[in-house]
Image (cartoon, rainbow, N blue to C red; front, top):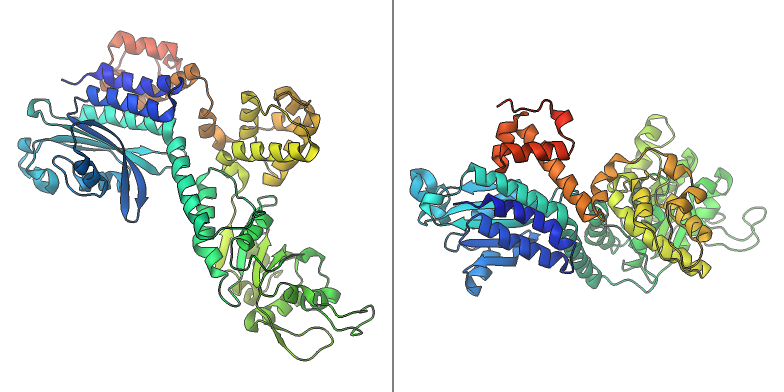
Length: 529
């Protein structure tokens, strides 16, 4: 028989053990063992996804008897008695839990070949990172008792358990995999000691780092590579990404030449970009190479590209077509080989429609595009960024604080940061200046330094991040409330169906509703059936 008390205990164990000394791995193992007992599993596997192309798995924990060679076979996706690699793969691809009833009960159970001749019922569910929506692990339970085969009720409990694991351990799983992938990427292309860092734990930042190393940095190895365009709001780090590309590319030993295109007037554009010969115009007192020749075999970063005049755009278009320049005062073309990175915070399609951007010029650099998300859309990056920025400014001012209080950090995560990373750096600079050495940065200091942070409406996208650091009691209450509301919604408000799916008595269920403040939200005191 199923032990639903144990299954509820397994969910609570996730939070309870996490609050102790054991750490994430101990919490997960303890909870999984309790869940295996609750599900009556004769075998149970917790498999972490190492890669998807091809599928690679790593066994985090096993409950029941499985020989080492059988465990390795499961990780390679090979069939083992009662363990179906096709079921595991479907769960990973679909992100949905699956129930496979004992084949002895149904003649058509052969639809899962690796289970067709076995005597097992199976529950398999995905552990999903609740912030990023990706499957990061799989739980797999087997039961060989035909009289106690898994049912739809067990599937419902499995979904609750998987959701809880994703809530509590999603970040730990994700960070472990991210660090491993980044180590592999950096090992392939080591940068110099002063190479910039792209910090953050959001899916956007993780994808950005991976694409920079797999697509954009290799593209710079070609002679006269295709230009790269970086799009993003002000303060999102376009200059940082350009310097990162240079630092990890084969051009790192050559110059990085940044140019603010807003400062290029029509009169001086050709001279500044392509150089000039001494005496070619009034004030030309010496030969100058110009930005393109200065960046030869290195990287030329053209920032605020949308501010260029149409005349200057025409000059650059000709250069992008044949990768040669003619310095002012000369007639002979000079071949060049810079990697050109362009950036803007403007909407280029709007600039095109308004006639401020030439279509043929845009066509020359629109193919390889990097789009940077604003900080409000990636709040998971905020904790790491504010901590890194605080330490940097402390080094700058030779002052040490004790860091942020938990409340202060939650305030900063909730703030939408309209000025993005640049505004965040400015804010942390003020916090360090206002703080007394050896004290913590708290709510009061934030209010004195930048009161607008507390006056601004919180960023709704930051809600999932704020689970991290919540006290155990508050986290448990939040989880219980969300679970009950989700289950009521699933059963169209039927309290009877909801409490039966949770295995609770009517009295206990009503006590939870009242204690969590749900009664007023879902109506009267009695079940409607």
